[in-house]
Image 1 (cartoon, one colour):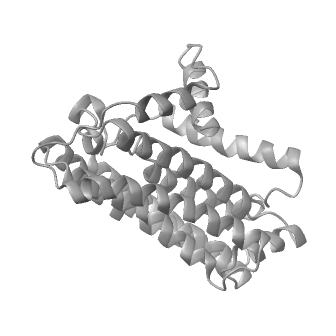
Image 2 (image 1 turned 90 degrees about the vertical axis):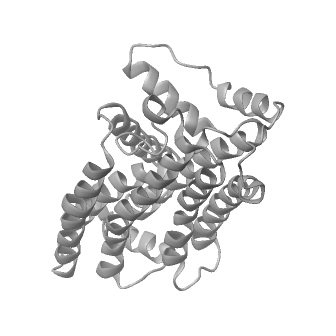
Length: 281
């Protein structure tokens, strides 16, 4: 929730506003949990309730896998487990829109599915660059290799992969320029248009946890981790700042533009980074 507040606060300052106090997200969450949950007549009640529950469980497990891969005995392929789990929140958003029985929610669900198909390939390509460089799919080993040599963004391939991964992660968060599935000015909230009360609070919490887990992952995977508390916090704030700046300095893209950009430039840059990593750059 603090990460979500920093997002809102930085956004406000960029727009010459004061922004909310640090406790605002906590208050918003508690307020939503106390409100009535309205179920649409045409909704599939089972999926309508299940989607936010699966979403919040998946991001909590994703964070647990990330931390266990660092502090405990990691799984041999924990990076691929992490990639798999990171897909689930987007799938639950698609299911939520499809289960709502609302035309605008259905439009948002279709957009969310196309969005998932667009950014997932370049995101995976970006994360494969350190795997190719270090011949390991263990997050802890990749972090330790950065301590022995230099951080991944210190290599040309790693820097390109970091940029590609960060742009693709904007899509996972549903942030501008990849916010077509919500698009309040077009489809009135899209996939979440029929959600209210505690179910909407769960989706908001899912997005906040996903933001925090994603930023933490980028710090560990590309910037060497949190070995020093002060520098670790500064790295975290830097990645968060970059995400918020991208969000606030770009217009919303159409679905066809997102597909061309993701399957075009981002994918080409991802393959280029892989080739550079194979060459040792």
